[in-house]
Image (cartoon, rainbow, N blue to C red; front, side, top):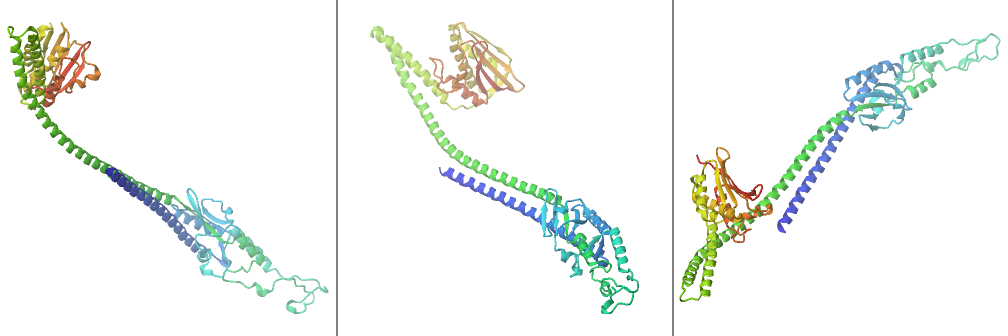
Length: 509
């Protein structure tokens, strides 16, 4: 449980660090985006300062600005700042547009003159990005806002007001009693003076007040309808999006690297833990293997020492079975049974000793077909007893192997086939060259074969399908094969029987 607790703590710590990195990058991305928005707004303030300079430079007599000249200047300003600036509009007190340049926008809906930021998908609309009075009329404090007039309207208003201003006094016929004198004096005989503004109030006014040729009601109407009370700047948000995209990918890469680092650290910790566990298991397995090796040597020694008493028992039982004059028949029969059982136990002990013996391979050049022929001649008595047909052949090939161990393999496999088939059965042994460096050996029989679920199990010690077998013959075969670096497998022999194939036999030079 202790390693599991350490693992939970490490994984929780890594997850917490990864979450902190993610939150940190999200906050940094939001900060960069806000800074980009602030920079765009500040850029709009700089443009509004330029707009104020343009308006101050174009104010003429009476604070009137030519609409044509102003819009031309604004259009040029929009062209110069086309990357960020998309449109400019000047609004009157009612929020109606009196002059504009760039993209068309519905400014009539913006009746407020307070500072406002309206963010859209592609643009941001800024209403009065800086204080209007400070920006536009800094040099003209206390004067009225500029009036935007077209040339035609300006000319028409001057002509109309000049005619009214310089119209001569109206006179009446003599004898009219309705005449009144000007300035508190009785009127001259025969002169009627209309009720008009005194001449001293018609003097020209500077400091951008009401023009002398314009009446006060007309001037106040122009201030409300065409006077600049607020302005709007439309800025493109693409620079913000570009900065946001670039910063997003940078943050995403950082988060990805943090994720990879956290995952890699977690996997490293898991591998280290597993390696530690594996090392502990290997140490225990090594100790167990040493113990089993010692037990194996002890068992082999015990089996070797057991054969001597068995040989003595066998000899005495054999002598007793031959004493016809002394021992009755039943005693001699039981003595022969003791000899047979002793031979079985001795054979099993010999196989066990052979299996437990260390395999030291001493390679030499061996003609494979010659080794097969010698083993067949060794088992000739068993072959003739069951009237079997054994065919040998194949490619004449020489391999590198331990001669004694190779004959042991061939002997066990051939004996296994002889025990598997019935009388008049058939066994085929063939060798073949796979390529210039490898060869293979096959032993086929037409016996009952080996079920598929037992084809891997038959190479394990003490596993046998033969009632007379000990279960160590094929285990010894696999032991010798692995010592040489070969491979052995059990397959089905079509149409009937079993096939044992040995591959990766090294061809001798």
